[in-house]
Every structure is written in structure tokens, then in C-alpha cells.
Amino acid sequence: MSKKQIYLFCDAGMSTSIMVNKMMEIVEKHNMPLQITAFPVARAQEVVEKEKPVAILLGPQVKF
Image (tube, rainbow, N blue to C red; front, side):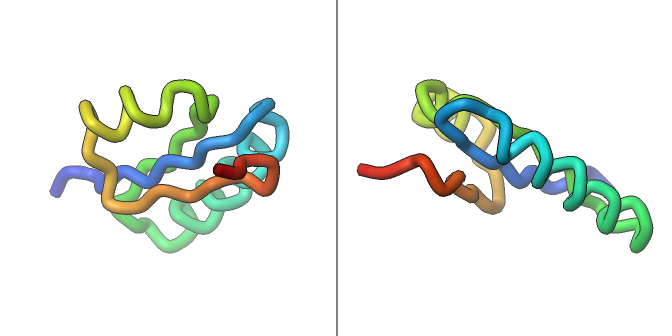
């Protein structure tokens, strides 16, 4: 089974990298078919259009 993608986008990358690590601990503990990756928000449109993740999470600094 292929892993489903969850992407986190953040302005600076610090808070999302911590969150990715914590989330991946749970994913691995429960043997879930997920891959969680962090990206800078400046790449959001490019990454989402290309990769089509199942979920997108935004860091607290990201605003529109």
C-alpha cells in the first residue's frame, strides 16, 4: 500500500519541523501508511498542485 501524503506549510519552518517529528512518532508507533513532510509556505501552490496531498496543515504564522 502506498503512503498517503500530509503536508505542513510554515513561514519559517521551525514549528512545523517539530510538529512533523512528533506526528511521525505516532505514525510509526501505530504503523500507519502516512508520510508527513514540511515545506515553506512560499512553495505551497507548486507542491500541492504537483503532489496532491490528502491533507494540508498550516503553521500558526501563515495567514492570508
